[in-house]
Image (cartoon, rainbow, N blue to C red; front, side, top):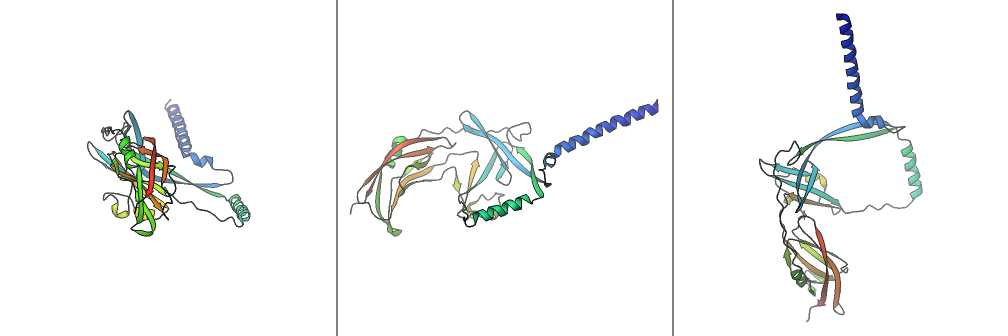
Length: 289
């Protein structure tokens, strides 16, 4: 009787061990999906991330999740602060078309001869700051009420541009309109090539190495942020109001033969990224001697 009991115990244990091993094989995933003709090598990359919620609108909650290499967070007992880094690539690489067909054929031959494929899987340990079962704190930044866009004051400031000799460049002519101050970032569409809009101190601020947050964990030296092909910006959370100084300007190689009136579309964006537009008419004229 005892012998039969041990046989049954061993059999049940073997079945449990089989299913446990089988479950481990299922979790491997991509190794079982290796393309035909390839030998796959899977590399696991362990990293961490932060995730939190905030008000992106009066009644709308949004989520920010980013790898620790792109976001720096200071989490205290009842509050948190994070700085999210974003890098924008602005250059396009153009390849020569010389011997394009020969190059393409050669690349295809090299691809066909590949027998090894490296698969990189990222294992992310996420810290949930203010939501979810494992949240660290309950603090959700409150919604900031944004005042209405001052449309009349804006159109008055962008009404006229007086152009004169450029004091910094004697071969050019330069002029700008009046300053417009407010909580909205201004951008333009349909302005002629000689004109543009400048809007300073927005939610997105380009910074150099020396201006980076002192408590930042970012290794800026590795990112070549000084390259003209890349632009590095930081967004700080919780969001806070940013006051912009905006104006319209014109740069000419030679003076106008006659004054010019341009009708164009201005876009104004608030703290939360909500954008609206209005039609503007600007009068460009040369300074009278």
